[in-house]
Structures are given as C-alpha cells and as structure tokens.
Image 1 (cartoon, rainbow, N blue to C red):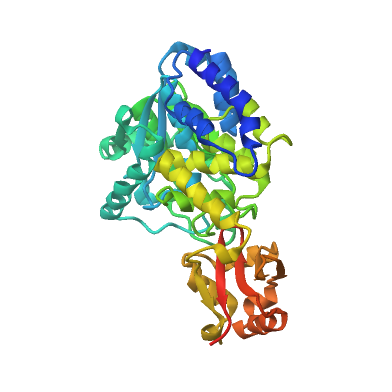
Image 2: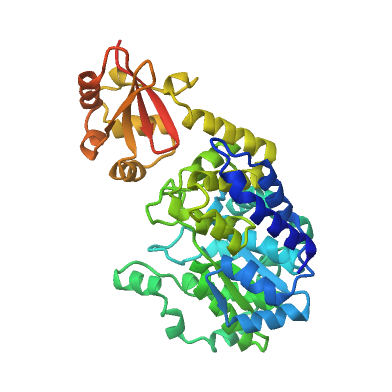
Length: 466
C-alpha cells in the first residue's frame, strides 16, 4: 500500500474520535485537511487486491461480471473507463455526482477516463424509470445544459486529464446496415424485460421506437471507445448490460460494470435525492446551503453518505458511525468535507461556524437577521402557502413530510431563554394562518417572542401584532 494513504488512514483513525468528542464545538480543521489531501492523492501504486475491497466495493452496488475479473483487468495496467451523461438538465446535485467521486478515485488509481457527453442520446432521452416519453431536446438546449454541467463538477473531478467526447463523433456516421447487424443479435424480448417498459405498455402509455433502442445506441459509445469498464448509477444497470451484450456481438471483450447507489434525499423520507422532491444538495449552492442541507439528514444516512461522497474507507466510517462519536459531530465533518470539496475549506468552515451560531445558540432572540413571517398580513392564506412563499423552491409534499415527522414547531421563548413548543399538525398546516395566530395568542406569555422552526435548517420570527 502507498505509504501516503496508509499514513493518512492511521492519522485519521487515531485523531478522529478525540477531535469529534471535543465538546461543545469540535475543531475539524485537521481532519478536513486529511480528507482534502485524500481527494487529490496519487493512488496508482496500490495493490488491486487491497484497492477493490477498500476503495471500490464500498462505493458500489454491483460489480459485473465479478470482482475476480475486475482485479484481473486492474493488474493489466491502465483501464479505459467510460462515464457518460446525457445533458438533459442544467442543474447537478450531489446524487448525480456519486459516480463522479468514484471516477475521480479510479482516475487517481491510474485509469484513463473517457467522459462521454451524450449529445445524440440526449435527443432521445433516457427512458429508465420514466412513466412517459421525455420531450425531445434541441441541440441548443443540450449545448446550454452542457455548458454548466462540467463547470459544476469541476471541483470534484479533474477534466484536464480526462478525455471528453460527444457521442455524435461516432454516432453521426453509423450506417443503417451496421445498426441492423447489431439489432439482429438483440431479441425484442430482451428489451421488453425492463419493468418500466412493461408498466408503460400495460397502462396504455406511449413507448417510442427511439426509447426502445436507447440502450443499443448508448452501447455504441462503449464499442467506439473499446471501454474496459463503465461507471453509472444503479438505475443504469439495464442500459450498461446492453453495452456488454453489444460489445460481445461485435467481437469485443465486454466491459466491466460498476453501479453506484442512488443516495437517499436529505429529508430522510426514503425517496432518492431529487430536485422535484426538494431533498437535494445542489453542487452550485453556496457553502452555507450545502452545510445546512447536509446537517439536516437523519443520523441513519451518515454511513451511506460517507461511503458515496467522501474518501473515507470502511473502517474509518465504522468509527464515525459508532457510539464513540456523537452523530452531530460526524455530520458536521460530512458537511464541511463536501462543502470544502465544492466551495473551498475557508468557505466551508465559515459556513459551519454560522450554522453553529444559528442552531447552537441558547436563545433564538440573539440571532440576527432572522426572516420574518407576518401572521396578521398573511391572513387568509393557509400556513402551507405562506411557507412556500417564504421558503421559495420547496414543494408542498416536502412540507407535509416535515409536518408528519413533527419537524415544524412554534417555539415560544421567554426573556431568560426558557422555551415551550407547539407542534404544527397537518390540520394547522392546511388551515388559514388565522388558526395558528389563535394558538399563538392563547399560549403566549407576556415576555415571549415567537418563532417557527422548520426542520433543522430554518427559523422564522413570527410577527403576531399590528
């Protein structure tokens, strides 16, 4: 094993428990420096027998055909690793970046990364998991999405030493007879084994021939590049299996598949991270938003997040998620590590200090510049409408989940910092604000100030008088 990585693991293992138990505010700078060095560390002299169980398996869901074949190819030398994206949207979130963290690790292990921009396949739209056809994108829309995509990923992936391709480079020149020759080797029954296709057909929803052929067209990328290995989210498994099938059909050695997990969203509802659900961490967000969103995750998500978006090894993660480390401290380390990777160390630590000041303060009264909600002026709107207006890009379903988890509360705070709380129920959430105003008026003591806490991330000062 490379002495640098061994030393890094030994140092982290020795220091982390004591530093993270340094109450009340652990000093994370030294641990953050260790993890920062890991993200750029040359790993090319590591033994594949150690690499696979320690640096690859913990970050993957499947390795196909098997670990033995992966080790065999790693021992051969430089691998051609394919990672492809269809730029169907301009915004990238942390869930999208999970395969990129693994690609960066493979890059530092000595692999050559072929980063494929699916400017042709994006015109079809990946049908995986969809219940309807995706509207076709124009070339201008694809170029616009692409212009921001690599910029957002640049802090966590070195594009300077990767090779970028647009798949139009080879797909624009594919002849009909070549396509027909490949299709003759792919049974229709194989394509219709997909559960998402079967569901759409049984429900009467449309399924176009272009969508049916999507995985075959995607496979031509692997053929053109003669890929040794492909990385993608676990939702891409069926598409990547087709890549293996088509490579074998044209006489090439089938690529190895590494699938990465679809991480759960920050709200802990069980749904995958998704912009539409509001439970995501944007890669373009400022450091304080990244820290705030990651500090809001439930404790049970610490281990999968550490495995997916940091450079920590399994034994180190076991320490961080054990009873010897306070979950809040482990979560702070996760938050500043990701924020530092995306926005820089200084911005990450400043954001953590601000978070601690806001949510670790004994008194909400001491917090400056809290956003306000005027209950008098908000009548007759419902509380859910008022919160949507105050919070911006947040869905009703997200607010309802927080309410179901008793995570929206009215906080009454006296002059000495004493507090009592009233949980906002679903009926209060959907009722006119006048109902909440009535509750506040009946519970309020003479010297109370009133606040509304939404989840673990946001506190509003409530205005209850003219």
